[in-house]
Image: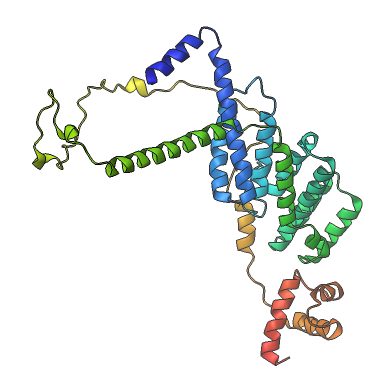
Length: 368
């Protein structure tokens, strides 16, 4: 079988350019891994997504692009976008050289570049969700300084609508993680809308020939094994004839006592191999071909600047003046109206969650 396949390859190389054939194989591999990444994104399998992403990146960046396919750069750009969204709620991950650029901030310009391959209404909705969640993630994590810097970056780098900018400014200044805007534009909604985009993009664009071919091979194996097992069952049920028990003329008689003894397994191969030479381990130098300005995988998993800010801020004790304001606010607006209390009374860098936790403690202490 191996010899026949080699004969086919050698006979066709004279008529067809091998580079063109390799380009088709490369195209199938890129399509397969792109389809796998889309599926893993929809399944929210972050660990498997990152493993497959490394394989996809090595193929796309190291091999030459296929001349007969123009959608591979787009597939690469989409994977850059998906990787950043997958890490959207992880503020310790960075994809850019600038330490203050969060994954969702990094995803915004990439999504802008995909405007031609996405529906206009869907593109606008995902853009709004990216802008809102870029700020929302920082506010929910308690990084008020980073939330303010993110909003400033959005005002400078994107076409931020004035109404949306005003609402986000209010959210950042009040540190309100439960604002109605954030409830209407959630991270889950962002993921669901991206799922819709991936489904639309994949229809009639990229083939999964490699997956379909592998599926046929697996199905053929199962059919073959089922056929073999059924034939073995049939032969066991059929009574053996007297002629079949007779040994053939050229066949040596077999001792029935050694039928069940297994042959000895060879520990070492008798085949003689060439002696290893150090020169054979040297690899030729190759230059890495860049296909896009965007990096697919992470640049770092921990932002030391952000981590230092988080660890360097000790938990601040509540003062008697803050307790007095909190009690007065509850008397005026009622329990649970933390946002209204924050608007009316001055608290030094406190959030609605801080007020809620402190009030629970005060109730236990004073039987409020």
